[in-house]
Amino acid sequence: MSVLTRIRHPHTNGNGSTTTEAARPSPEVRRAPAEEAEPSGGPAVRPSGWLAALRVATGFVFLWAFLDKTFGLGYATQSENAWINGGSPTRGFLSGVAVGPLEGTFHAWAGDTWADWLFMVGLAAIGVAVILGVGLRLAAVAGTAMMALMWAAEWPLAEHTSAGDPSMSTNPLVDYHVIYALALIAIAVTHAGDRWGFGRIWARIPVVRRYYGVLQ
Image 1: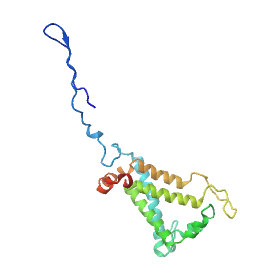
Image 2: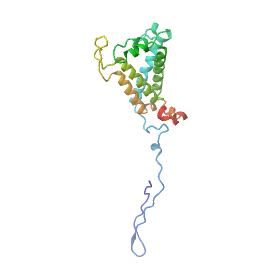
Image 3: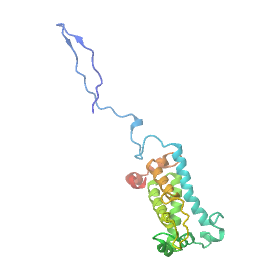
Image 4: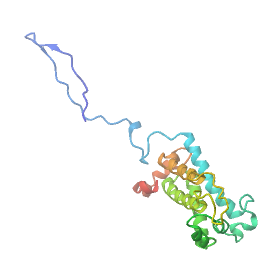
């Protein structure tokens, strides 16, 4: 839309009457560089440091789980049960599921090679991507799916296990799996990888620019 650039003051012509020159439209003004869209398609304003800190912390949760299960760092996983020593990252957790409509399904998956690899590759990929601030949308989708499965395995809705024991559920709806999923979604939609991360560099890769809605 054209803008008015100048309105001349009224002046008196030769016969004493007053005339006013009509305002002339100028060519459309180009936006200032600060208003131009970012190459990534994201906001021009960088996300806050708090969002960046949330991103790094959330990514480390996933990466640490991968490292501990792979090498048996002595916290949740002892050395003799490490993945590199022949242990199964999924057998202990899935075989111990004792509640929920998917109990039998999780027991059948426990210790399967495909389940171990899918779980561990997911942990590593999500952790690295989120810490680096790249591929956050894919990481959010994968991480949310993983958290949904783990939520279903613990099934906090139930008050009792299939054996009749108390389930020890601390909240029937919102537990830490839901919080992690929401954190992943939040950092993806706010472009939190643009601060203390490689989000802007990632967004300039040609294939990422072409499929930014998926590869953000």
